[in-house]
Length: 121
Image (cartoon, rainbow, N blue to C red; front, side, top):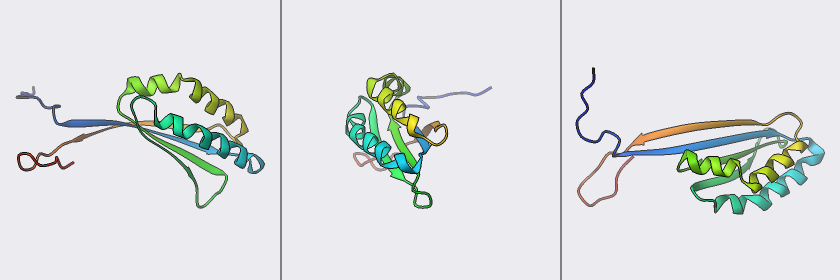
């Protein structure tokens, strides 16, 4: 049995990380990259989106990755049902193999420093 005193989650920050990995056909890489680049600015402005970045592997130029950071599962769910995400999924028809989408929920406690100063994570 655990005894909980105070508010144990009051100083906890939660972040949802989404990693989408894609292997594109070499002749379709430019087309898919342009589609993603045209969407990324809109995705960054969606409610709850803290980050949305697009990467290409240094080892394999046909391996692409999107990294998203969300503040809540509800906002991520809305994003996954959005028209822009449907466009992205449609563009994934250019892939060499099915994409991989990983979703991680990360919680970090905040350690308070001196009164009035910024919290340290």
